[in-house]
Structures are given as structure tokens and as C-alpha cells.
Image (cartoon, rainbow, N blue to C red; front, side, top):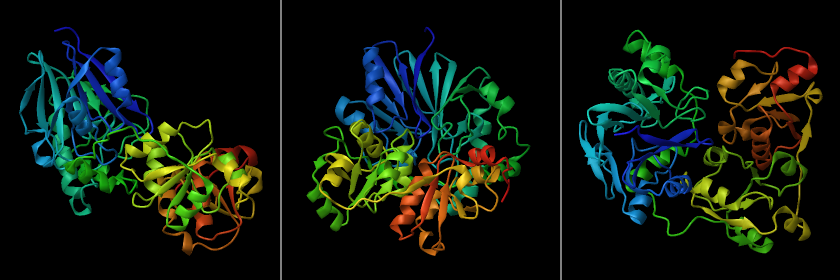
Length: 453
């Protein structure tokens, strides 16, 4: 057979890659696709392909699988680990099982670690291993985290991950490595531009594959684990039960001002997705700021709850469909609509408006500085004396913080505005947001950043 035609479909926001493989006969295989199938449908349509097979490497923690949707709407055959005990129609595979794709074959390899039921899929052309879909096992320069199933299984799964990576390393060096998790994924992947690799490259460069023994591997992997969004803990079980099949594309229903006010009284929450400067200038009191950008879904899943009705506030030039799909792919089906007319309609109705002051790097002397970046970012360099609380942990600690003027900062300002909105919800006043980050402060003041704890 000619060279395999494979298309990587990258979700920059979640840091994941799905794959579409042209099987050469008008059919396609897709691997690890999310519920947002727009890119899959577009890629298949451009090539005149029907998605005949959908393989899932594991019960994902960071997005809802789109495999069941494909099965229900296109009759796609779903391939997944038998050990996952999925409660919907699928072909359960065990180690060594093969599926004939019509010229190509897919062989299941048990590679537990990231999750207990994890499978990698070898793509074979005849007897030649072309590539391997490694999911959350072997990543480019790393391996996926092992603490998502249960805290008391983290070390045991890390030891299984050691064995899985060593098993994958026995493949021929020219075998392509096609992982699901990549740079930007909270499932643990180092920053970088490469999303695919080869076995030979990983053997030569991946620090975890170069660990001298199992104990060193476990120490290095567990030591690299940072925080992750709490919605991760829900999606594995939702994927096992089977994500609800959508009968229409998600959308934002328009809600007038009076309806929004009534819903807020009944317990709904506002999520304002406008750029930070627009939110700073004017927003509805109590609104949560999560600017719409590629990482919107991750922060929505980190800062907003999935069991409370959510109402969106956006600018007219922001894509309502993108907002709805980003929420849907992480299981947030609780977006009940948007404020029709946005902040202008609220203002026109003479409802309360508030603002949050933005400050420059030269305006934070002699004031409390709260740095809400991830721990590795903070350790790499921060403003001297800055208090550190990760944004994801802030809501639970806001009531304990001193009620004093505070400048919130992150790398650029978007996350800091989200933190400021959480503090305002908790009754803090005198909260301002730094435009920019620690590097801007260092350039402006000519002073050095501190590193370490």
C-alpha cells in the first residue's frame, strides 16, 4: 500500500490532537476525537471520506469523546478497551486484538499508566508497523500523568506507565508516534511545538525513557505533576457511560435583561467572555471573567461549575457557536443562553454596572501583589514579595485573604482578570489587575525577578 495519509486535528486550547486516517477506499479511521466534531467532519468531507471507525485510547479526563456521537449518527464502529466497561455499543478490544480496516490493520496494545484501561493502537500495513497512536502513554518528550484515576493509585499507575513506555520503545525506530496529549495539555506534556515524533527520537531525547530504572522514572514523573482542572474528575465516568448524543448543534439562546435578572435570582451565574479591557471598563457585578480564547474551555471547566445554569455575556464580534462548542466538548451542557444585546443592553436597562481598574507595571509599588499563575511559572520568576495562589485554587481561599488593596497578576492579564472577578464575588474591594506580567515589570522597573519558592 502507498504511504498512509494521516491528518492531525489539533485542539490548541486543550493541547490535544485527534487523527484522521484515509483508509484508501473512501473510508476513514479517526482516533481520540472530541465531542466537537466540526474539524473531523470538515477533514473527511474535503477528502470525500466516510468515518467508518472511531478508536478511543482511554477514558479521557479532559474532553468528552465524540465516538458515541459518530456511532449514533453515522453508524461508525467504535473501538475501545474492553477493560473500560463502556455502557454503549462498541467493540471491546484486549491486548493483541486486531481489527481489519481494509488493507490496513489496527492492533491493540495494553499500555496502562495514564489510566488503568489505556490502549495504544498500532497501525500496520501488512506486517510493517507504520505508527502507533499512544494516547496518554508515550508523549513527545514526556508521558501523561498518572494521578487522575485515584490518588491512592498514582504510584502504582506510574510504575505501570514505566512498563508501557518500555514496551513501546521496543518498536522499530522509524515507527511514527502519534500521541493525543501534547503541549498545553494539563494531562502533562512539556511545552514545545512538536506534536508527533518517532520511536527513535523518543528513545534518544525523552527524559523519562532515559531514566535509569523504574524508581527513577516514578520519581521524575510524579515530581512533574501539577494541578489540573476539577472537571477532569467527571469526564472519565461520563465517557464510560456514554456522552449524551446531541440532536442538534449547541447554541446560545438569547435572553432579555429581565429574564437574566430572574435567572440570576434563581441561582444562575454569569460568565463574561469579553476581552479583559472590555470587562475592566464595565461589567455586571458578580460576573466571572473568562476571556474567549483557545484555552476558554479549560478555564471554564476550572472556574465555573457544571451543575449551575450559566449565562454568557459576549461582544457581538465573538463567535457564539465557538463558545457553545467549547463548553459542550468538556461536558458543560448547562449554558442556558446569553444576554441579548450584551453589556449595552444591561446598561440601557439602567442596571448596575461596575469596573475593575487596570494598572501598569510602574504602579504596583507598596501594594500587595497576588500572582495567580501555575506553580512552575511562579517558580521560574516572580515579582519579589508576591503572594502565590494558583487561579484554580483561589475561589476556595478568597474568604481567607486579607481585605486590603491588591494587584492581581499573571502572564498577560487574562487569568488575572478572572482572579479579580472571583475576589470581587467574595466581597473584596480595591482589587486591580496588572496589564502584562512579571517580565513587563522587570523591564519597566529595571529590577530582577525572584526565582524559586
